[in-house]
Length: 71
Image: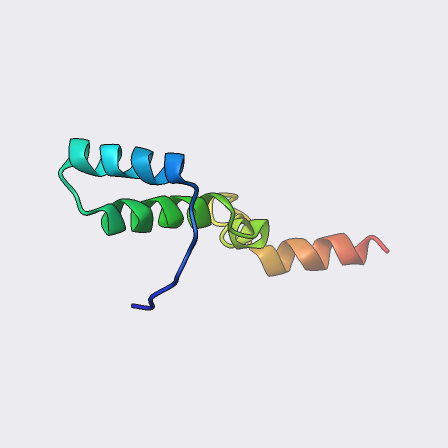
């Protein structure tokens, strides 16, 4: 695990402290979870295309060859 120094505005630190106390977690764990959620929401969309043919019931290579045969 890497350590990263980040400056946060005091109101954010106070909110983090309140969340950590309410969830009975260390503030560092609350921050780790927040960063993980942000990273999950902002992943490049190219990762979403893998496996899109799995439920089509068509062989992808055969489909490609059929489409190209029309040219």
